[in-house]
Length: 356
Image 1: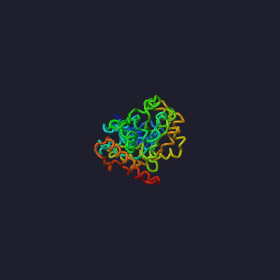
Image 2 (image 1 turned 90 degrees about the vertical axis):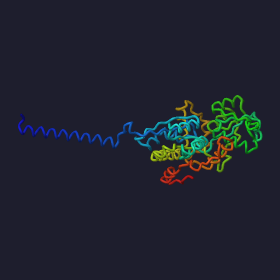
Image 3 (image 1 turned 90 degrees about the horizontal axis):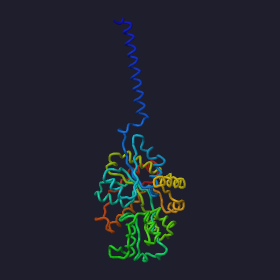
Image 4 (image 1 turned 30 degrees about the vertical axis):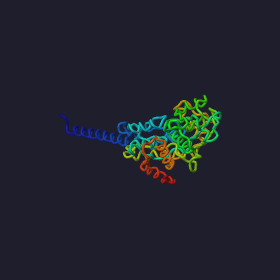
């Protein structure tokens, strides 16, 4: 049996031990709350798509520099997926496998129309310009009329350049073989277009950069039409940022954070064009194992402009052209396709003009 003094000492020792335990637990909790990375189960996953292409420059720059992850914070797990075609992006959005992506205008319109305006929203622009009609010198194409009877390639049936070509032909009184005319359009992947061009199997191609420049430099082609010449002020949307409507509704704070980094990346590219080009090409090389030759990079860069402005007027016109070409069953109503409120908040904070 313990003496009274001994019992008192035991109680004191136990109390001190409990105090030390509670103090240690409090320190651990404070550390976890203030600076530690949350467990994976507690982190939000954001799935982002882009193409290893010059027209998706902000994605390449922002991911390489860590700008997007910094803006999102440690509580967000960023997962990226690379694509080679816009329709694949739309299918991933429909399947709820993708939250946000860089994409061309026509696939975005198709996705919006097919889902009755429910699947996605355009939240920012990415690139203006960077598409041209290139001809083989031997084809003898000197005017629009000379395109009659010719074989012209585009990257994909119904894609942005395919629609632009069909609108240009219609404007000049020409029609395609399937519609009773004599112009044959050959939808072909860009790498194969270059091969066909070199072999003389096609007469011309309407393609985006860097394939425009590759056809000129590597295929000995000639610039027949820079698409910028068809648009007011030379501006038309080539790439933009879309987000799934459900993700926008559930995580507007994360979408806003992404847009902050997107705008900052745009301005950094504008302010540091040479460093940006090198970084973008380096990232393209990492993904594709084929960085662009310096001459192609310089040529392509000169025909495009990086921007966060979605250039909505050109999208509306492109959608109308897609309808007239038969790619949309009904005349498109795009009144709800844009959600630019978060972008304009970010621009206002930075003292920049809002976009329309």
